[in-house]
Image (cartoon, rainbow, N blue to C red; front, side, top):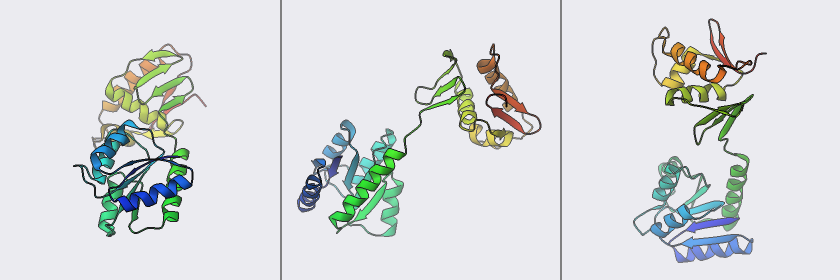
Length: 226
């Protein structure tokens, strides 16, 4: 695997690099936060090891936060001499995937890296959702039905995304208000009915196989007729 190590302590860096090289891994090393962030942003790595305290104007948590803001999901192991529970919590909440305190055994470091990479490989991020011939691309926010593009407003897309994620399940009005509008409106409001009607016209209009169904007295279901 290809590893990025950002560590300013020369002795620790040599120790980690030597061990990883002996295991057959490729390692890029930066000894300050500025260079570490540059490598993290511009390179492709299977896993990153970031020291918590770094020179160069950017510390380890700063690198983690910057990467997560750009949707970089590379697994990150934070190294730190700060062993307090509050510090470990800060590191994990900033976006780190694991936290290892100094001093540490190389065998434990290696095992944790392997676990992070395995987890990342099994947690494939689903960016395209489909129901029958309806296709929803979450990254580009493009929707097609039978290959034909469908233009949706922002709220309509969010509504459709929620329905697709719960395909073949009955979704209540309360669920839609809470998750799509993020407000607790009066359940009697017609805002949902208006948006459902518009969405149904766009995805089912002209189709002989409607996908968006009303479940009377309960809510809605997206999926082929059963």
